[in-house]
Length: 97
Image (cartoon, rainbow, N blue to C red; front, side):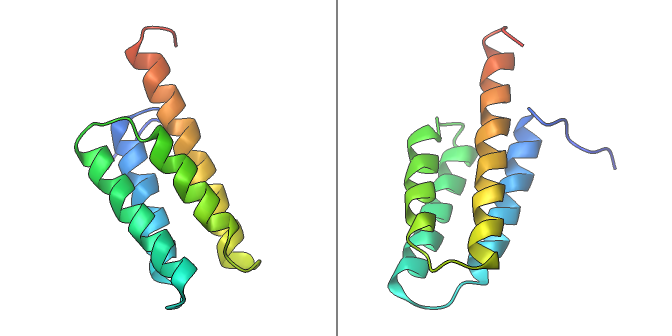
């Protein structure tokens, strides 16, 4: 199987899958539930080919509310990678790669 290029829709879906997996490891406190809801909304937007920029920002804000720890760091890095991949996908779609 071939790896998806960084700016492809498949790469974005793979990154979302990673974020979804990490969110599943969170506990049951209110902020964790909010993170999982944000991740679900982001997945729906990606599947619908909608602009996930606002949802990414909301997710980043919610992740910042989590207690500090390794899982929060992993989520922040994965979401930053998603934002980067989406930016590359947008640039390629607009012809400015």
